Image 1 (cartoon, rainbow over the protein chains, first blue to last red):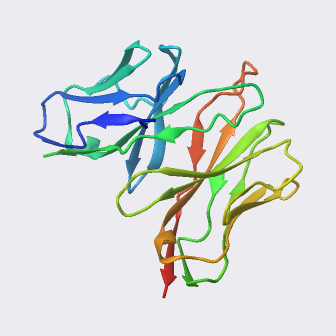
Image 2 (cartoon, chains in turn yellow, red):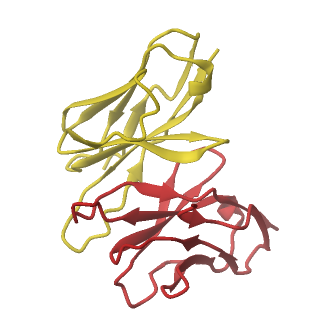
Length: 116
Length: 119
């Protein structure tokens, strides 16, 4: 089975430009998470969805960040306008819950974003 | 306050020996989950092992085991028979119960421990 798919794997852009990161969760998973990893702040959750509905977006740093999940197999994280401090690795993860299961989150390979 | 604390920024171990990576956590929830992930230099996050707060037995997955001491709020990862490919960053994470009582909240990660396996 394919794992979580993210695109692009690398993105270099200039300050002020719009950036769109994409994620395809594992088929059948009903939770989708967006994380950001930086040296200073480590791994932090930005937002997560359940059945395509945003549940907790308290980690979204500011209004420049937005996330959507139009259907069960696709999500986007958009930064507009981008700033150098947004440079980080952005991970998408998905999980599926059965009663009594571990609801393990499986991560995609990440998108390395560099904003110049 | 830190919810997940990994006190060892770096650890070294000889190939074929066992190593323990420390993790302590802080929560007032009765139901929670503890996870360990491995992040090699290539950057991906690889799930290793899970321990539920109500699980009475320590979790094991191949060479990985989780030394769960609930009263001490610790969830240490034990890697037996270390291999060169185990060299990576290791993250401990905790999933707490949502305020509404559902069990699927965010994962909170520790700062990680870099493990280096020497030949």
